[in-house]
Image (cartoon, rainbow, N blue to C red; front, side, top):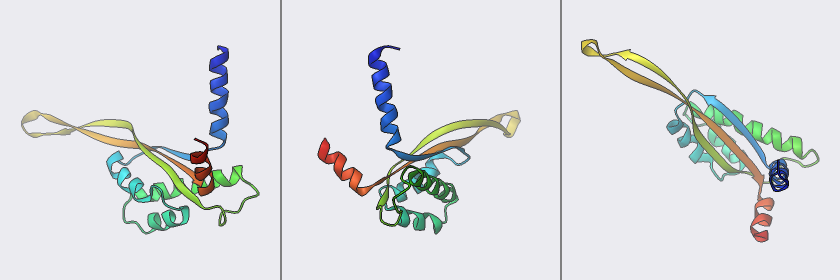
Length: 140
């Protein structure tokens, strides 16, 4: 590895230590349905987002609620002295990507077969404090 690549890799590694996130992989829900839930909490404060997810009637909201709790736990692990109530955490970024697709066949009339695609998705949630976002925008 060259010197420039090593410096860039070290910088990315240090930047990742300052981010607080959680990842859910291969969730057996279609990405389209999961994006409806993700869009409902994007940019919200963490406590409000948890309330929205808890009382949502969508099945996908259960997985996102657990994932958000995991992201909060990751934030607490990296900031041991800080209190959650005083920190003003919010959902900085939430991404829903397509996962693997299981392909199945269903019988159709006249000896044909139709393909059934069972979709899955990957969800990534980033949480951050309001003060960190203000400092980053001022530095740029």
